[in-house]
Figure 1: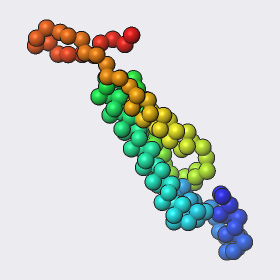
Figure 2 (figure 1 turned 120 degrees about the vertical axis):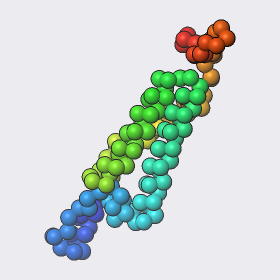
Figure 3 (figure 1 turned 180 degrees about the vertical axis):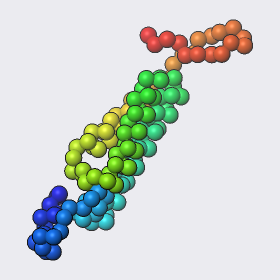
Length: 130
């Protein structure tokens, strides 16, 4: 893996250079099925982070919702940057994808925060964390 330039230099000569983005690098190394699996993994991680953000926000845990949103933004940023830089086999994506899975698991286990009873007409707000 990651030997696309070396292998293609033997086939096409010394003029071959590395591909210019992550998606093409996976496609060259692993074929179309490998690239599609990577894109499916990327989209699944983004959906996990989005679900964790929604779940934590609905349960009243703003801190965890903010972390999940940061993970989601990081994954979307990677997806865009991957078009411009061949970092397919670096571990950055996999670290953040792991954080998305962890955030989704934490968000699923969060109990809802109790709401403080206020006088009629006053807006309800979550109780302070214990």
